[in-house]
Every structure is written in C-alpha cells, then in structure tokens.
Length: 526
Image (tube, rainbow, N blue to C red; front, side):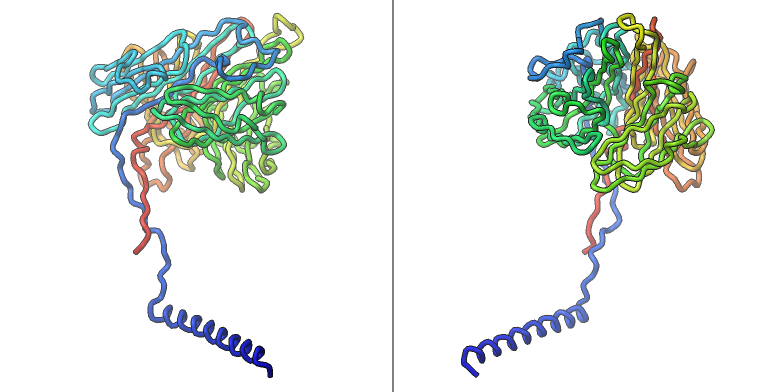
C-alpha cells in the first residue's frame, strides 16, 4: 500500500469517527437537555396612547396637475361642463364625553398649528365644515378627549350635470397608510384612471407600485416609483404607463412615511359621458372578501352597461372563487356566476346583469387570497351629442373589513345629493343589532335607534332617518352568549336625479379609530 493511500484511508476513518461522535453527542444532549419548541405565547393586548386623528380628503376629481408630465386621452375634455366640489366633515362626542375640537386645513398647511377653520362643538353635538370650490386636497384633524380617539369623518363630493365630467363622485377622507390596494378603473381608449397620492407628513414618501391587468401583471415602467414630497400631492395617469388595459388593480407600498391614495376615474363612449368617480382602497387580499353597498336597479336587468364585480388574484396559483349575494331575505347565488376561476396574476370582471333590483353585499369566498370591488352603473337617457347612445354614471365600492363600529359620511345631502341610503350587511350566522345615531347638520345628534339585521342579510337605513344628517354613527351591539364577534360592513349610496337620468356615488364607512389603538403583541416562550 502506498503512503498516499494510507494517509487517505486514515483521514477517511477519522472523519467518519468525528461525524458519528457529533451525532451521538447531539442525541445524548437532547436526552439530558431536551430542546423545547419555541412557540409564541398568547398575545397581550397593548393600548397605544390616543393621538390626534388626521384624515386626508381628496381634491376635485379628473383635474390633471401641471407637473404630472402626462396628458389625458385626446377624446377627454376636462373643461367640458361645470363641476362643483365640496369637502364636508364632522366631529362628534362619544356618550358621556365632551365633543372634541376639530380643524380643517389645506394639505399644504397640514403641519401648521393654525387651522383654516376650527370647530369646537358644544355639549355632545356634532359639527360640520364645508369648503365650496375646493382647489385641492385637505386634512381633517381632531384632538382626543380624555385619552380617547376622536370620532371624526368626512368626504369629498363632486357633481356635474352635463359635459364630459357628467356624474356624481364621492370618497370618504382616508387615514394615511403605508400600503394599500386600489381596485378600479380602466385605460382603454376614452377612459382615464388617475392615481392620486396625498402625503400629509413632514417628510417625503416614496411610493412603489405594482399592477395587474386582464391577462397578467402589468409593467409600469417609469410609473413604478412615485416620490411624494412632504405635505404635497402627486398623481400618476395610468393610461400613460399602462395603456389599453380594460381592467386594473394596483398595489402600493410606501417608504419614508404614509400617504392617502385615491383613484380618479372617468370614461367616454365616443362623445357620450360614461361616468366619473373617486374610489379609495380595498381590503387586503383574503380568502373571504365582502363588498358592501351593492345597490342595483332595473337598468341592471338588461343593459349594455351592467354593474360588475371586479376580482384580482395577485398570487401565483389559480383562485377558485365562489360568489354569494346577501340581501334582505338572506343569501342567493347569481346564475352562471356561482363559481369563477381567476387565473394567477389577473383581474377578472363578473357581470351582475339580470340580478333583481335591490340592496346587496357581495361575498366572495376563494381558495387563494383575493381582493375586489364593485362598480355600480346607472344608465340614463339618450345623449344630446349622440342620440344613439345613452349616458351612464358609475360608482365604485371597494371590499371592506367587517367593523364593530363606524361613521358613515353623507356629504351634501339635500343640496348636491338628492337622496342617500346607508346599506348595512351582517355577514354572521346570527342576527345582529346595530345602533344608529344620525349626526345632524345643525350641530345635534339624533336619538339612537336600533336596526336588527338577520343573519347573512342586508338592511337599509334611509328616508326620514337620514333627513338633515351629515353622517351616521353605527355601533354593533354585543351578542349575549354569541360565539361570533359582532361586526358589519356598511356603505352609503348617494343619488341625484338630473334631466337625462340618475347620478350615483358611494361613500365607504370610516372605522372608529379608537379600536385601532389596541394592538396585539406576541412574546416567544423563554
């Protein structure tokens, strides 16, 4: 045997002996000192001190900023017709508390202690602030009372009766966030979808965007990153970076701060207005998604412009989605749309044509995380510019998380809005009582009333219950002995009748931010 081979064989034996020794040592160590599983301990609820509540309200819709670097579709004329925009907000005291002090300031002045208009309602009353002909976005602020977050809400509303911007558009004021999903809009010829970012913070924020379309992920090129300076607004025209997309969904993540993001959408069919709207974020992707306020009328029975549900599957696997509609008498399926497969990385539309008129919530149950929104259509009479086509208005309603308490703004009801209804849905399997208080425009709070919603059903609050109201407060009543948390989804539907048809807008419910002060903190076992 050669010396080289002898050295190699000795090294092999020594290596195997070392490995066996290490394995034996680990087995003995586990026997004497067994390794315990590191399992998270039960979460501890930690209450974060209440701070000033700050909500960002959108500016007028469909107005291109001078520094956007892009132009609208040539068929779209934002100057045609006159659009009136208002921002309305209110602050209300909780039972047994004095009402908070609130303020309204332009976005550019959000860091100032000087308010453009402050309101300090007396007693337990509400307050209202309105700015007509708003030139840009604004911030609603309110102070905590006795260590409890303020009850404050507001909304932007725009209305135009004629012209390319014919329609009613509304969106609630948003709490700034570090991420969000926007499910709305189109960039086909004649359509404009503009994403607006409002940064009320003292530092610049970098917004990174991902998009999905009808056939898969959409490359946004130069639009994938947007820098939003402090106390400023920036906008991105999606048709400039993602043209010819019949349906879109956008995810945003923010670095260096938080922003409020809206989609301003408008459309033309030739020379005929086909709707405008403002829409806010949808719920995060989940296996069960709820869209409140799906109010259909007879034009959805047989029309070329039906209301639809838009579903986005951002994952890498196909999503098998089951659709149910929850209405006054319980739940129902939509013939032909009971189950839909949404391909990975795509956005799919589900038509609601043929569904009987009424108020619903849409429940989507999937085997993959999804999020969604609905667009409600109202078809009017023949257009003056093209009698062969009918005018249309549209309203987007985003998927929402069930809430135990909420505020719902009702902007400009009785003025620019002809009528309003609040659509409440109980997704649970037992009946739910919801206390409703109307926030009156004159500074008062209406007597509470209780609305009972059957299991898996939808109820309406409208008519006399909302006369003179600028908003409503909703509180789910505790279920005695119930195993399910008391929660609901809600949205307001605003309607105005004009000479050539009906205008429609939707306003999402504002969560009670007091509940967000309690966070779950987990600690590993020692």
